[in-house]
Image 1 (tube, one colour):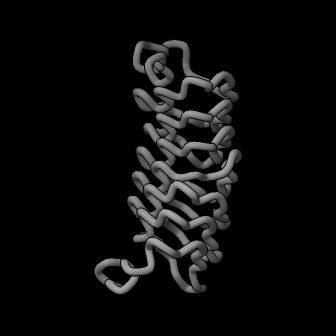
Image 2 (cartoon, helix red, strand yellow; image 1 turned 180 degrees about the vertical axis):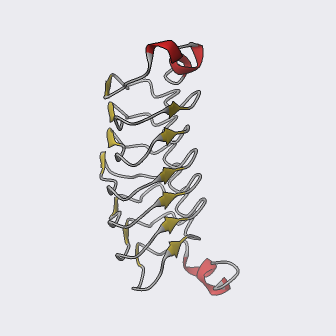
Amino acid sequence: WDKYCPQFNKYKATVTRIEIGEGITSVGGFASCPRLKMVILPVGVKEIRKGAFQFDSNLRQINFPEGLETIMMNAFNKTGLPDTLKLPASLLLIEGGAFSGSMYVTCVEVPMKIDSLSNSFYRTPSLLSVTLPTNLYFLAYGAFSEDTLLRTIYNLRVNPVKINEKIQRAFFH
């Protein structure tokens, strides 16, 4: 937004709700909006860009529309997203740090089309449970590191031959 709409900077401190119009396929540029509480995304959004809502600590409500395919690095880093993340089945990629540091997220169900997961949810202090897709073939080192309350992981299916220190370290504290 700084590049395309420089005047938005003067509203960042006061904006509480953002509604993205129809026809927009890529969303970003709303980081560090301290009072932002709600984001409404239209059907047709394909990606949420790097750092899109990073540091929006009061963000409590967002819809992830069906058709969304990519959530980029740090898109929701250190936000106040609600307890249960409802991610769409269409999601293909969640990049590293996408939800790291999200203070209130307690439950995540990773969509079935995700076959590889990086450290998208590390340092999520309230995370209690994660449901992984059954076709997951790669879980990154430190994927859930420092998620000290994480106690339940559903569908963790790993070929026993491939269980090694790296898989074990995905959950280190």
